[in-house]
Amino acid sequence: MKKSAFFVASLLATAAISSAQAQDVRLGLRAGANYSNLAGNVKNENTFNNKVGFLGGVMVNIPVLADGFLSVQPEVLYSQKGFENKPTEYTGLLGAKQKREGNVNYNYIDVPLLLKINAGGFIAEAGPQYSYLLGANDETKTTTTPALGGSPTTTESQNKRDVSGLNRNELGYVAGVGYQANSGLSLSLRYTGAFSDFVKSDNNTYFNGDLKNARHSAFQLSLGYLIGSK
Image (tube, rainbow, N blue to C red):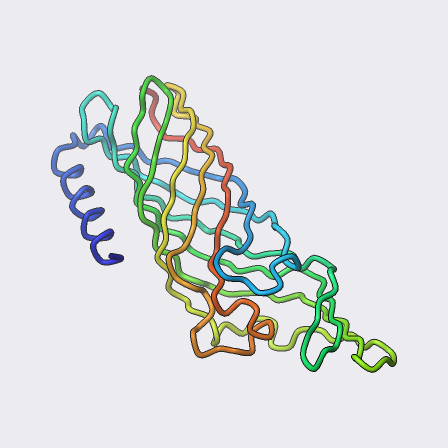
């Protein structure tokens, strides 16, 4: 399924490049914000909050039809995803009560390949996305209260930037709507998700196994600018 999606996307891109006039290809910039969290079968789900992160990068718009109604738009974006630990108490190992606090940031390079419809300025776009994990920063503090009573203890995450237990390559999807002015300025609202879990299947220790079947998801609000007015 994943290979088929990229195969179809590659065919669309090839067809678009072959049919487009060189002067109609437009370069552009995009910048905005992710409102990200986790999807999938997440344990202790109520302890994870949405988090705001930056996204930004470059794009190329390649028309498929001469009037600009249909185009292909590959992008390369730096994208901050992750979650915020909600300070909610839950039952941990051996019945101990635990509470996590702090943010966890995952820094990605996202490469969406979008099929884009522009109907008089109204935009609808969708397509596959490849993502590569550049690095992570885990700022989690965990407070543990023993099941049989006693003083609580607080520990900070170890190996804060270790990504050895994570899948660095990810295949996902993007879909969204927006508006594009004739000047090339646009506003887009998108949703992006992943097909695969971002924690390796044999990693049972990351966040005590709570995120073993978790996937990244995010709403994205961004401004774009295609160079050259229409």
